[in-house]
Image (cartoon, rainbow, N blue to C red):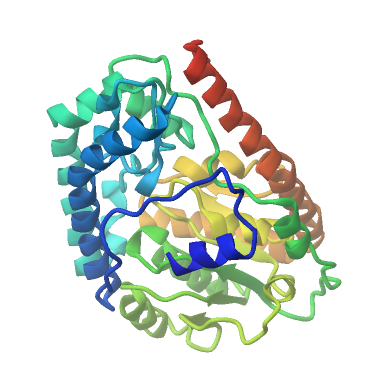
Length: 377
């Protein structure tokens, strides 16, 4: 709330955009896994009080449509479809399921979390309130094809579930991340980057195994993961066990204040995430010219193409690590691929995931919703 108030005072928010707040801000537990559960409970409580507040505001303003964008999750239904006006639910995500064949790569706590999440997903699909919300929404925008198929099944209809990339970059951000990269040389190791909350689903354990296999094949890869999270201790132990402590840095942010310049010192963004609707840190690194290596699974699988990077088939951790190691060896042997694919990666994000395209797609959704025009999927 303070940031919104400050933005309003600075004239950064149009005067016709109004805010109302429901509930009070509260602190979260320092353990991110516990904080995640806290956030779900609070979001559920929020939805229980939402309809009464929305009805009161609707009586004052007479809205033409209503959109629920908070949390982008399908697991908790929104009551806003009951307002009796066209309702947009989403963009929604969180439909991704962690592949059971890769559970062995996780710490015990992360393994339990993913199993519980899968069970909860199964039960949520049976919820009458969630199904009613999906059925009564005019449209439910989703970020990728797996989510589209999932929501269509939940909704009981293929109509009204358009692909809408709700992860995008304004022109200023794209310019800030686009830097001149230093000339790649064979005289130093390959340098790989990753970021994002360090949960088991990010696939960093598989990346570490790949770096170990590449090392055995004579290719040294320096790997830096700049974020922290509940899986950090498990990954640090794995790195030490594999003898990678001298080439892997986990959980330490950049010292540089210029994020783009720091990204420009890396050749690759290595994050074979096994449950990701988007992958913003991957996209940022691609804008800076890093070559992506990702799992061929959900969000990242759709913005990474063969021209700009590599997608690894989701099988089991050892096979995936072996394939990533093979790719690392190819890139080490032919460093010219780093510049060619890195340039293509930057172009891919700039051309297909920019703010203008997002605003145009959302405006189309709004126009179709108000007019009652069917939305193509």
